[in-house]
Amino acid sequence: MLIAGANIEPFFIYPKQFFKKIYYYLCFSKKSRMILTIDVGNTRIKSAVFEQNTVLETSVFLKETLEESIEKIFKKFSNIEVLVLSSVGKIDEKGLDFLFGRIKIHVIDRDQPFPFQNNYATPNTLGIDRMVLVAGAVLQFPAQNRLIIDAGTCVTYDYVDQNDVYHGGAISPGTRLRYEAMHNYTAKLPLLELEDIEKVVGNSTSNSMHSGVVNGLTFEIDGYINAIKAEKENFIIILTGGDANFLAKRLKNTIFANSNFLLESLNSLYQYQINND
Image (cartoon, rainbow, N blue to C red; front, side, top):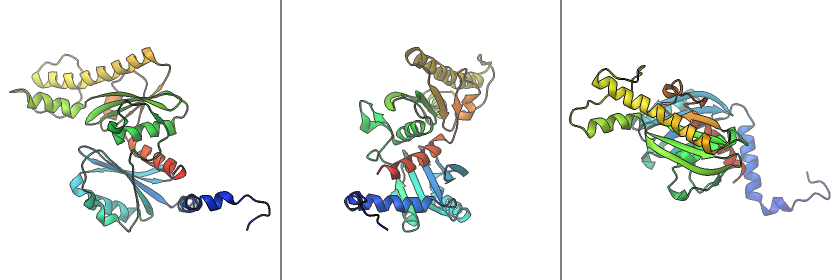
């Protein structure tokens, strides 16, 4: 019903945006509507099922089992209506053909709206995973200086200030790459898996390698945080990625550790984008 004297001009000028917002309101106003977020990394695929902002289930699987793994998720959560996808690893688009026509697929790309100003000198080279993490930090921790550390295949550091301006950060090898580098570029050093170690001084070749990887990365992270502290005002530190929980207990600095922060950021960013498209 239209009220006499009401300004209906915006309705006619922006009918597409109007009906789009109505659609998403109807989709997500019912608590049973669910979102599946998927992060395609360099080595593995991670996923999470959300009911509004609540995580119902997370899973990790290989790219080779993509269709099988997603079908299992759909079987368990039949109310999933939207799949939100972020990918830095290689994935065959035909691998998603089985989803077309079943649910809405929202692929995150750099041309979409993001809740921060990007001051990176080469914005087109900034990884979409780093952009998603920065967006999640801005949306979940508003009006604060934030440092996001993602400890995965590579360790990335990203700084965004309280005014939501992204300045950049750093990239270094993660634990797996450090072990592989020592094995691949020397004649006799073995290929080891990540292992907890208590001492700084290793009493064997294997223990020395573990100390070099684990303690070396721990010192690097604490050192980077301390270097930022010398330049910036107080900030929150968010540690995420596959090695987040392993490293968190070793760091001297106070941090917020959440290994699923990227998946949560995908959910937050999607909600932001459908309201700002």
